[in-house]
Image (cartoon, rainbow over the protein chains, first blue to last red):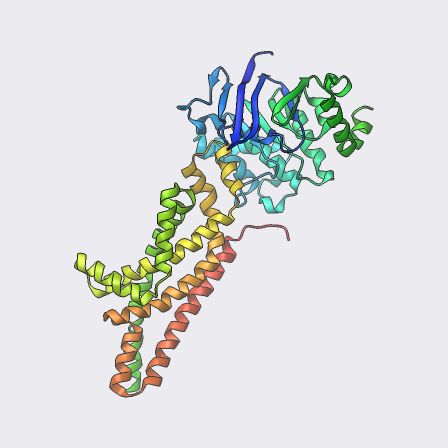
Length: 257
Length: 214
């Protein structure tokens, strides 16, 4: 499994004079889990948004399955159907139940017939372990459950790639585990994933490759082993040391044990 | 004529009051909603134009606008005072309803639009299935207020000669020299109309409320 599914070439994003990132190159193979790490404000989230065209990049190209998706004539709504996105603050549709949240894209975007859509939506909820919450509204679910429904909503569209934008950053510590568990399972099932996170335990355990982004460019990338234990760049070492101290206490207990 | 038939005469204006309201309020809602959507999601030019519309309409007394619009409307097409008055009132209220809907759209978080686009919906679908259903719920309480204002402002069309409640009350008051009786009767009818409307909208708001844990 080494066919590149997503290729990013010299991608650049600016807001006026302010360069968010420049000349980013990244190639993602089918089934890979890529974890993007880096200090806040270095364009990690913007990069994910550019990949599913929620934000327009200013230069460079993005290719999905041998097709450029950043061209002028590209149908962005069509492209987004094939790229799943999970947001930091869940962003479930507040007026719809968990099941309706998952089903809506199937009926309205994929034009699936109602019975099939219902079945598929239920299967996706089961996949994230929330079939028993199908009739609950977002306001009746915990943060962890909301995020799992959001993952199911994205999965229902059968995306080629899943993007996770700090999926656990808005969660209480005791709810992080259930979301990471779902993501871990997805990675094992062979889903192609791009994950922006500060969960170093997850990165170390699940990532095929870690990309360290700082000040809008890739400082270093490599296997978790390379980055955690043999970082080439001083900045990478510093950042990982700081972040492990902040977030990683429980990781060293379970992750290394 | 006895008191009972005077009162009956005033009360029979209720049909006009309700009819004027039922024309003005929905037409104002349609125009207001379209303008609000144009204002929030439209380009810069559309944004400015709709904002200008709202500023001008809300900056003038309804009765003054009513006269201006009435003479424009009835001057260009041949309409009865009833229709011209109702449509004019609809235009007046559209600006206020535009602001109500606009505020409600803006209170639905921008993230909802982003999440809708992320599953491949186009902008129209996102507005139709995600933004508007949430907007409606947020807009009901302030809209209930505007509905009350329109019911009361429907009395303004009396100045155009529409025989609604106030017009009839004034005629009775002049012919019987019983202003207190006539206008109290009119006031009572207006109050009942407003009261029932607000209570119904409260009930609707409760029915549409999205369940959430406390």
